[in-house]
Image 1 (cartoon, one colour):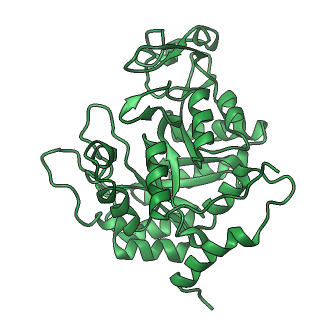
Image 2 (cartoon, one colour):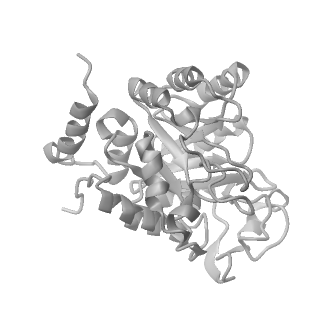
Image 3 (cartoon, one colour):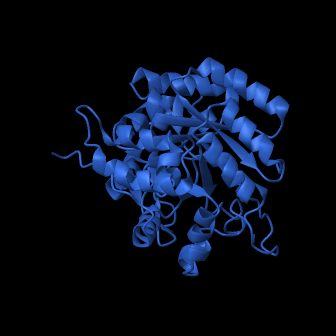
Length: 342
């Protein structure tokens, strides 16, 4: 018999009370369980720290993609940190958002022109303040090791889809294959077929999530069948607003429609929205204009987070994880995790 949504919501509230953490279970295991069973956790909104969590109150306060950012995110209670992956000149997988080192390190030039040994001389800086930290450009393996057992890792692959197996192999080598979420943009049948080939070579021990944007996909059936094809725990959904002169979305667009939400429930996957700003672009460009700026600069979080949650979002990626967690707690959208300190 199919469970109704009220019953699912009740179970989401009761489940943590009924289950004590088993021996050997860490917080990342608990996060994984919630990620892979969306329907039991519709009443709990998961938080993703963009670039591992580098801002507070609109200002960079720590180096992005840094161990310090991971430590802070884990201490806050964030579920997932996002890390950006590139390659050095000698093929090492490193964590860096931009294709150049100029903005976030003491070095200059393209990441791909530096060997790993040279990258180890580049210290991370806090954008805006220019503060030079003690950290150097990290390898992917190092950052995964820093996150292991504490938070899940969302991999933003700045390379090609064909690099995903190598990314997965690094995670697997340190026992983190089931602690990462890889993804790729899909918009038609050919792109799905290409991505399925790549994902098959990655291995079933790594979770995959499709990225779907409403400039190319407006058919909910495509979204639903794509999520099902990859047995995806979530779909990252983009509602575009590229021009600040355009009105903000009033309904969330086709990917956050009532039909889309019903499809997510049928498929037992999370609807993921990104509210972080993109540099030199309108605030909320990938969230229909309803982004972090409206929430925290204009002090209207209900019109951002409340809006997206009402339309089915159960995972939110933000540059302001501390403030978002505070708002979610106050609105009753968080269910505590088992205490593993005893």
